[in-house]
Image 1 (cartoon, helix red, strand yellow):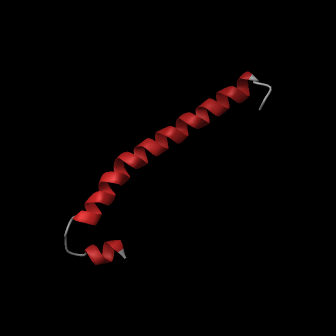
Image 2 (cartoon, one colour):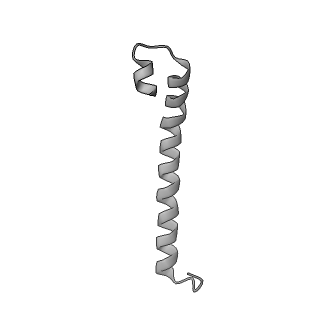
Length: 50
């Protein structure tokens, strides 16, 4: 990893891109969804949050 071989750098950058993309998508969906689940009142809430 310390040799800075171009292939290793490419793979590392791609891995970081995928990780950041997955984190962003999950945060965009999960934070509002979790907030809604916590604050909303709806039939079956106890079943969903159990």
